Image 1 (tube, rainbow, N blue to C red):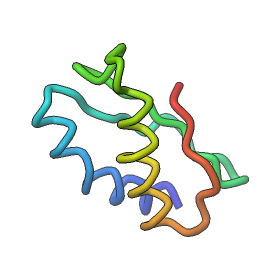
Image 2: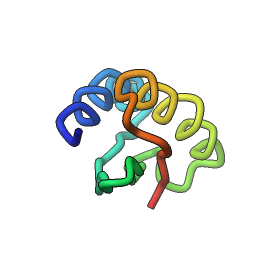
Image 3: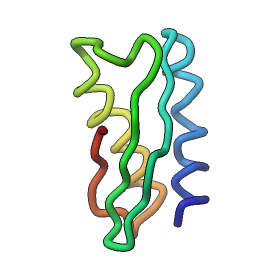
Length: 73
């Protein structure tokens, strides 16, 4: 499942990098929880929560059906 999540992140990563940010995969639990870390310009950005939910989480959930939740760490 980790490889599938990495592939999903590769789809959204260019958009984040275009704004000076990035996303790092920290962990994928056996229960289907994905933990990511926003980095660069995304770290501490007031819109980081929206980026996580509307961008990163949306793509991961669409690409990897076994994922139940995405959390920022």
